[in-house]
Image 1 (spheres, rainbow over the protein chains, first blue to last red):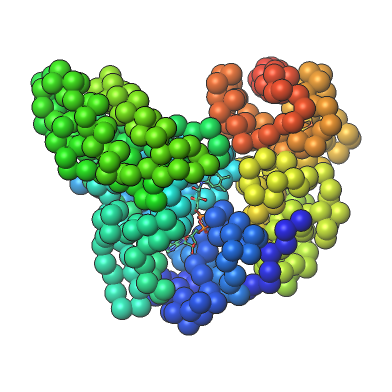
Image 2: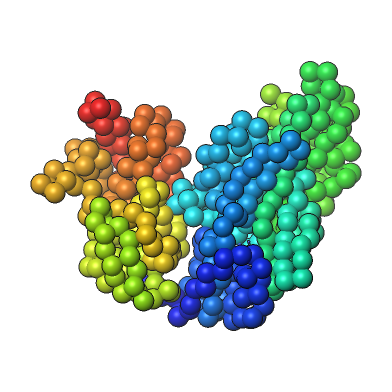
Length: 286
Length: 157
Ligand SMILES: Cc1cc2nc3c(=O)[nH]c(=O)nc-3n(C[C@H](O)[C@H](O)[C@H](O)COP(=O)(O)OP(=O)(O)OC[C@H]3O[C@@H](n4cnc5c(N)ncnc54)[C@H](O)[C@@H]3O)c2cc1C
Ligand code: FES
Ligand code: FES
């Protein structure tokens, strides 16, 4: 057995109190949500903390709310709660379907969306989809609140721009308009995806023309990535875009700069980006 | 510290420490060894137990998370008179185990699936059970057992 070293759990009642606890314990403390990542790293002795601050005891962070302009997901909402939410299934089917394919059913029951994003594990499904959907996260620390885009939150493998005393409190995703089509596809043979690819298209005239496109690719390199140049190649009359898919994939792959790892070689991942961009394009417009 | 929760339908109180996993408390403090531990990293599902009806990996979930909640382990499935739960009986009838190490977790995950989705398609069964690993059976009899249990449960209603 891999027993955990001794630690104490603290139960803040407000975000402010949690921020103060995090600042007080400094290096010795860490925020704790579902624990599905954190406890594994602690079991393997990669991380050591004497104090865990349980964000789940702060009321109100586990809610999903659909507003006129956006969907708000509290940080402690689990993958399962997203996949089961009726409004998410109706208005954001791409998000519900993605959540239903994160990890296994046990991890989905306990793992939170906030924990997934804050751990910044390179093989994250939500991080890639949320980048394409132009999501924002709300962050709060002792000195106040700020709002960050996905690219401002996740800056590298296991690396975010959160300060020691800062908590992610929620995620806002703009409503998917009637003229928009979104798809997320992943390729996975192991525990984590080898590649995740998200595509959001603004379409005109029964899908004959694409007015705007936003693609994101993740898992192939340290953080999810997108490219203005690839997005430009993905816009225009549909038959023209179809001919440009390989070029767009190449540009996207250059931007992502895939790495060799246990999930596959960089070359293989570049190939996958081409295959999955095409599939996502077909799926989005189906 | 004291942890109180509902275990297999009965309120229980047990001494524990914050860093203890639910599997440690179940196996070492409560001697309920039906919950198996294998990979210890949430991959295999041998340690599956249900908390408020949802499957969790007790190898990693802290016992702390069980406070004031309902925990069901494999020991809690049969009726007090010993009559097996339909999922348990179906696993026997369909020869859905060999060494049996994955079985408690398989059965609890399957129960959670059928409680939520009484008539799952084959694809739905495979997707839901995807995180429960079996080294022996090749899965075919497990899927069959779940289908059979689903039928039996729907006939009972
Ligand atoms: C077997 C397995 C398979 C997996 N497969 C996939 C997969 O296919 N796709 C995928 O995307 N993910 C996958 N995951 C990752 C999974 O999604 C995450 O483990 C989970 O969402 C993390 O959430 P948590 O609440 O458990 O985080 P925790 O483990 O509690 O926390 C993770 C980190 O985030 C920090 N943190 C948590 N909440 C906050 C907050 N509100 N503010 C600031 N910091 C915070 C913690 O301090 C910690 O450092 C897998 C995980 C496992 C174990
Ligand atoms: S022992 Fe818990 S999932 Fe393998
Ligand atoms: S019966 Fe042996 S591992 Fe499943």
